Length: 70
Image (tube, rainbow, N blue to C red; front, top):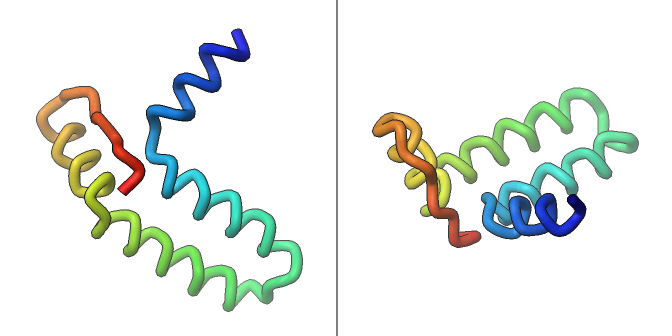
């Protein structure tokens, strides 16, 4: 089971996973305003990335995305 989870995570949007992890860790010390700004920036950056564009396209076309971490 752990191997399946590891494989699933490794083929996912790894750059976004890293950003979410950083946001979560920093949320304990950031002000709400700062956290909201960082989250908005993270969402924008993710949507503009290759993986973000590909993920949106795959969703619209009802296909499975093939993320590369870019």
